[in-house]
Image 1 (tube, protein in one colour):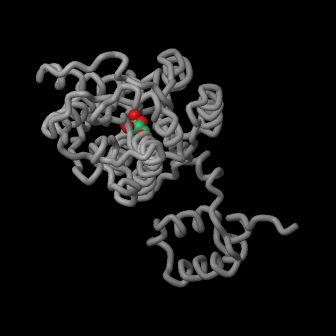
Image 2 (cartoon, helix red, strand yellow; image 1 turned 180 degrees about the horizontal axis):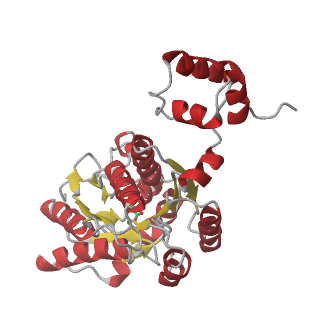
Length: 335
Ligand code: RIB
């Protein structure tokens, strides 16, 4: 088995010191002759030398690596978030190590510990279940910069905030404007903090218009396509004229269930989602939803975390991102 070419091999072949090779390959070799620089680069290519990043980490004391933990990589919301993370990571010369824990607390803790063992420089955690003590015990005590997004926005110093209350209000305004007052909501039975704020915004805006949302009009399901699909019967039992699904995946599953019951969306019942994932434009009817700027959220979360990695003493960084209504075909005026 051939061994990996080392910087020492390259230095010997070029007839220079290891330090000279390191400085030339790191763009700091201007004090060496053009001939020496050319010889080192040419031999690097011929020998196939690739710097050993772990060795570099020991010197630079930075892995240039961030860990990213999300609940569900299968949900386009989180894959779009990851796209933003990757874009900014690349711009800032970091590598993201990405894990989806599928709402499994044990798996989430496992990944968190494994990421820390690998000396990542910081963490972005979109967790449905990260606990304050886990944050204190694992992250703070280890002095690891982290940023919590979206789910249970906990005590992370830096925040990327999306206005869930405003999103809930926009959802209510839209359905009220279409004349709907008999509305059902589909959401998980253990909602994270941001979902609770979203529902509260929705309920309060309805109440401001003297429209009541009784507890039994809130149908509980997993926040997935299957969850929305399986909620169909419970939703129909409420005889609503419109449904607000707490995220798009739930809305898409529900639309499938309504279709199988012979119901027309929006002619028989309007369906409103939340997130604005790319699938919304490709289902029939196209899904009306509340847009979350999720790629930007991924970019901003990564930028704030890397800023924190580079200077842990800086003041708290706060980014607020807006939401807005994306009116398509799945909602219509009350007949
Ligand atoms: O679709 C995933 C949902 O989980 C989004 O609404 C996001 O805000 C998170 O809460």
